[in-house]
Figure 1 (spheres, rainbow, N blue to C red):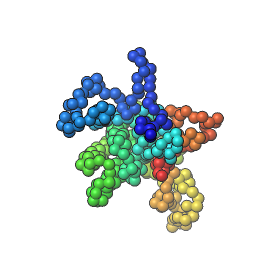
Figure 2: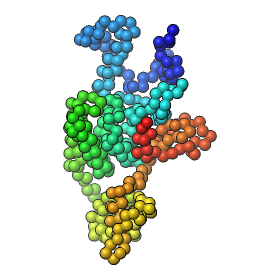
Figure 3: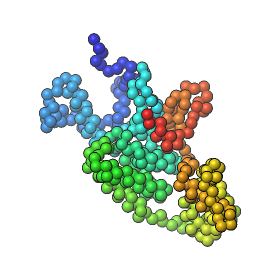
Figure 4: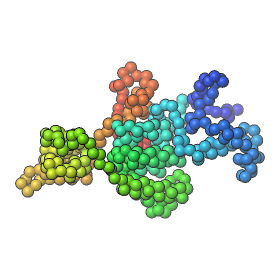
Length: 356
């Protein structure tokens, strides 16, 4: 006779010891309030005539109703204690199924990561890549979590004025994708009702309008200004910038910075930082004096090749344990030399890990 219960190979429930005895840990979110726990099942089932369920079936239906009631009235749907996830790409005797992009989006602590300036650009770039091509692969719960975190990203930019250009590009890519999927395709290919996605599209347009109207106030201080620094110090600061837009915007502030931002050596080092030497030979750009125009070279190469990405902190992947985690949080590694097994993961590599 086949075994009809739960798979004995599953990891089972997690428990913690309290003063009143052992208590099961609920992973899908915080526990319901006591008043919600006392909801009568008759009141939940009378309208849909589901009172025909008896025994365990009736109890399971009641539990599902309470979960749905909780999930529809809260914005933080998932609460996990572990800040890492096992990247599983196939079924084994011990584990069934595989890890999806939506599951990783729910398990990894992106809500706390955006509060860290070292990780903000990384999360924003990852969400931009998901908006471009991976929205259709997310489950309903992952989509809800995605937009909840996106709302926190926009709120942080409006409050702290941190990197609004990156978030504007993110929202613009998301709007273009939703227009193609909900309007131009002719049929909905996303999880959920099309009216929900139209409401989300209106919310994104509202966020975009708020960012366009954002004005960063000038802070008047009695200390030294950037223009008061020596020229060699200002030049060294320009050499530390890896984004051409930041160099151009900084050069528009004063005539002195305008002259420093047009330095050929500055654009030459910027080209060597982002692109390889082989790419220069294929797209050589010469000026009238037959010298290399490095600024024009940079913008020419940017059209054909991806630029080098640089982040303060990234997710890391342990090749020994197949675990994805934030380096500050760590993970239970069993290797003799855990540091030798670590590999930083770029946003694009993060998405590639979950493409089968």
